[in-house]
Length: 63
Image 1 (cartoon, rainbow, N blue to C red):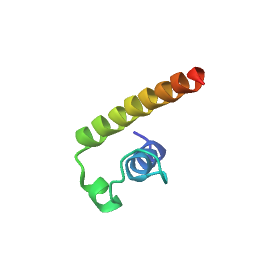
Image 2: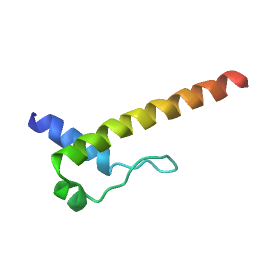
Image 3: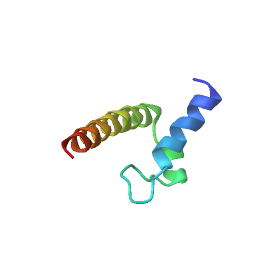
């Protein structure tokens, strides 16, 4: 794993858009996660974002 990959992972765990969905893990908590848990969360975040994007696309087509 590169430093950039590690940093990007922490960012994805901690970032939370205004009015959007997503995790908002405090940085200190994210740093304490075991690597396997962090990797699982990142994979799951990706899946959730894909599902939400698909739902938004479907809703937009109905208009």
